[in-house]
Length: 227
Image (cartoon, rainbow, N blue to C red; front, top):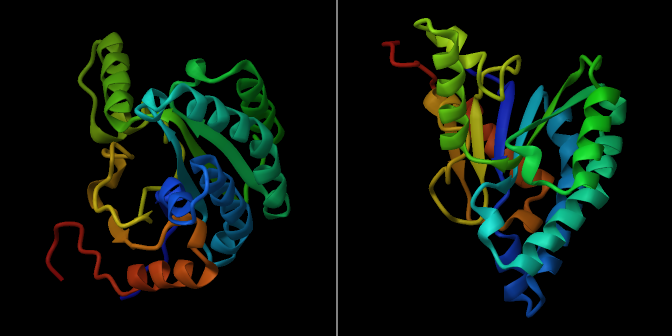
């Protein structure tokens, strides 16, 4: 039986290596990665995906060289609105998961504005992970649960995660050749299908999207049960 993925998470890996292979500064790779995302995101929704979660900046990324982190923040500030505008006709609701206190004030203001502008959208979801780590997310939820002073069931606990209100995660795509989740949506990934490709993110075309979604559609998702 075929299942169409409702919620796809994407670990957009390989920007720096893409640039290095071409003798370019790493930031050129990040710029190419953003251009690729803006180009390809509408197609992902056109393929029937309702929710896309993007691993844009992890809690570990902020320990990269200060110049690279600063340039990444500038890239975010410049392109978050552009990204939202690219899918405006698809009625997509924007959200962010992660500790945004670390982000520059202009990025936080853009996030606030996009969240407000799209809060009534009902066509789908764009969830961007910024200064996000799954272990921190789970610990945050545990601390919130402790404050409630009651034993929670799985549904109640899920509602304390950043992804509360979003569809269950069906598929994680990771580009760049690595075969690990790197602290991305660990709780949500319990029964997600995992698709790894050696393609570096700036080279991830519509054809590669099709390959990932075709892989998913061929999976027999039993969720621990017997056919």
